[in-house]
Length: 130
Image (cartoon, rainbow, N blue to C red):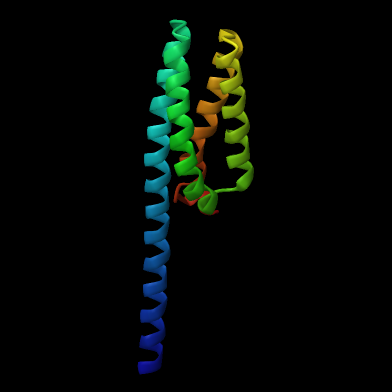
């Protein structure tokens, strides 16, 4: 009987570790996604008002934030997702540099969608587990 109690205790401990890890991961992705999303929204506003210098400043700040975030996200999510964000960020940079509002706004929307859907896709829910 003692042997089975030890096994049950170990299983419960491992289950708690897995659930805790899932919650931590979800919170980390959600927090960083919101921070990146705020900067993307700022860039969008600057592009709409054709304040290209502010848009470029904020974009450079977003790139720095992304470089920090990327290392964490690379451990937690599919690398294709990270590559998609990188590609979109590169396009936005070029469109802002060229001051092409329509293309920049289109790509900002794509970038926003990539950033926003990551926490939803990776969240610790029954839908994502099964």
